[in-house]
Amino acid sequence: MKTKTKRRYTGSPRRLAEVRPIELRTEVVSVDSNTTKSLDELTDEQLFARYQAGEDDAFRVIVARYEPSIKGFLHKRLKDEERVEDLTQDTFLRVHRARQRYDASRKFSTWIYTIASNLLKNEYRNRSRKRETSFTDLRRESMQGAPSRPVEFESDTADPERIAYQHELREAIRDAIERMDEHHRVPFVMREVEDRTYEEISEAIGVPVGTVKSRLFRARNAFQQLFPVPV
Image (cartoon, rainbow, N blue to C red; front, side, top):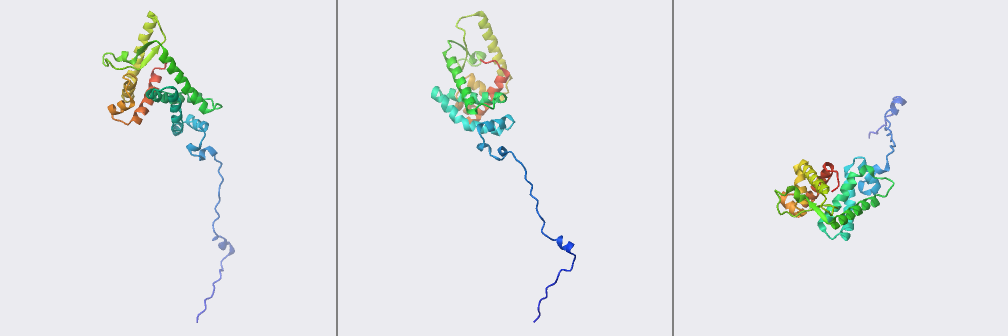
């Protein structure tokens, strides 16, 4: 019966050391805790800071977070579904346009509800005015009999200077609309000039209602840039 003999390593100790397991070095990296959180976990203020820095997804989270409550706030005070939709969009449009002017020391929820409240006050004020002109006047030749969405003025008298101003204003509005790209102009005119519902616009241009709202949001932003004077 053969017996196995153990072979001893006769090489140099240095050579033996070279075959030892490799030690892995771990490096500790300092990371801002906010960057490791998902957007949904951030506070409103942290989210808006991200948006101010150019992260568009942060704004989408803000809209998803606040749209239902803003809409509910407006609906309790204005029993007009279509106008509630419009004012909700306008609220986020104002937030977007004022993003670099936001005071970070102020609570975001207070700021956005103040914007919505001011828009609501403007709506009440506009409805109480006696004199009005409409977008329909801009397209009288092509939209005879179309229902109108008012663009209102405070004048109660037939002041010649006021009439001239209103004429110039209508021309400026028409020019701004003409300068919009067709992709945005079509739903904008259908909504603001023809006073069609979101569903009617959706059916007419063959896109979902959500897409209509998205295009109108961008269209209103484009219009305000082309025509910055409030009407």
